[in-house]
Image (cartoon, rainbow, N blue to C red; front, side, top):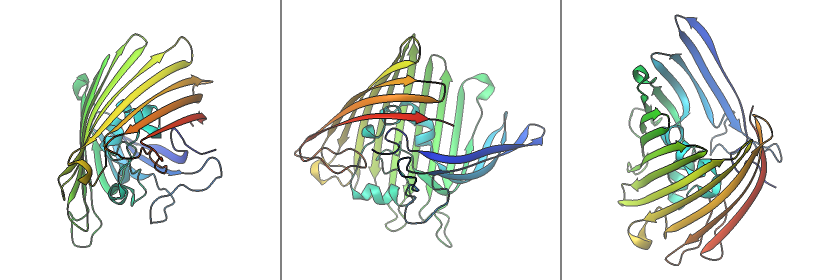
Length: 314
């Protein structure tokens, strides 16, 4: 038995205070924990009371939200809604080499190679706009100070987002770049995604690329998935991802191409509680072993995973 197979278990507080004239203070603090044993989830090498999020800001409906603290970048908050890893769970997050774990996981972030699993940015300033005049267009920008004394750029992170939403179409593009404080090389991610809703079907597509400037290594990804909503509370999700590194087996981010396919059945017992069952299959090429994120490599070039769980949101 494990905790948070689909979405990591978490507990937090969020709130707002009306300051008058439509302006309000907003905040959120959140930590992860193991629902199976009650332990705190890892927050990296630094002990944290709120390892997932800890931020405060100001918000106004016609001006947007400006916030400060430990926050997610726009790869997660802008593009996750199109990704199989977010819709069908961790088997679709892309596991990389130990370099990825160091670049992303050192501060307690999810080491998914595309940052779609949830990479946190400490000491960050983040702005999200409202929809412009009802056009469906919105944008966001973030800058995270690296925390190096005397430098505003060493170890810094920049993230940007542009989105468009007008039913039945939803589109988004995001870019995030983080400077490694030791080598000063940059690890960058860019993604373009969209969804289209027709009847009971919702179709999603996502293109991603991760790049490590120290070597010029890249990993490109293609992600397709769809949801079919049955009458009532049940839905079916099907997803496929393909990951393709350049430079063959000398790539320092990922070795060998990866194909991942999976499906999930979801049934809501109420508005906040659902049951799910899923299966995922991955195949690696070029003599490499398959590996799901957070799991040891397979003994072969393929691996399969099944999950059954219950989820409650509050």
